[in-house]
Image 1 (cartoon, rainbow, N blue to C red):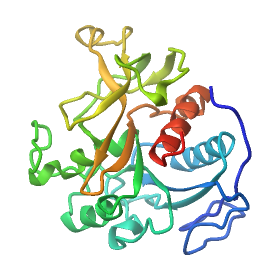
Image 2: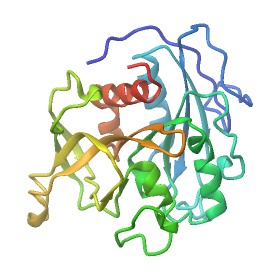
Image 3: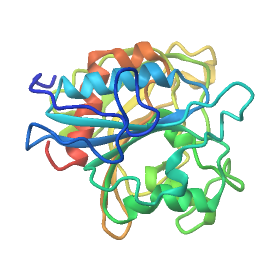
Image 4: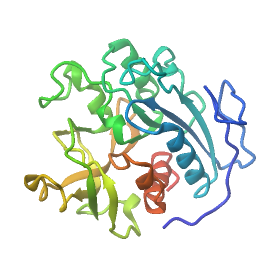
Length: 275
């Protein structure tokens, strides 16, 4: 478990949370060592308003942090799998931040121009943390088939580190530390999550596994023995940006678990070079 230490100041960037005014850039912290974190969220299939609150509160309870948000929650009648995230037209959206947490679900956003903008800061070296449906975003072409480095539809998977194409029914996931260990997993005590989605692993791009997961109670008997990486790290792009990804936490109850928030906080600290 992480020690609970001082908190920074949080401000929203776009469409702020209640009682928080929007600003154009990262908030100024009262703590010089605060990690400046931008959380990108919105899209289909999840309660992102709840997740924004859980993540911000969880990070600030575990490290000195400034947490800002940029998001778009689709309105009724809009295509939720293509959220109109402001980052699509702004390749400098991450200026001033140490780490960007991608928690969006843009499963049908296949615009190369949008992807160029999303990846731009990471290609320049900005670190990233990818959560859950971020791994199932920005898909194009025959994305259900294995891709290889350099393919036009491999660009997002090369960033997240693993190509995942789907998951089975929700069921508790039994977690374990990956073979070889990892600094992020130091002190991690294996546990079983609440009902959650176990994402498959199709193609990997030089990742170092952190945690693995299995669903021994799955409704699909053939899936009960399948073991997949559920958290990993790698380095991305010409500047070798640090990237931590985890496929866990479809549901708010799984994200609210202090053990999950410990994991994400350690992933953020590792990505920022502060672990």
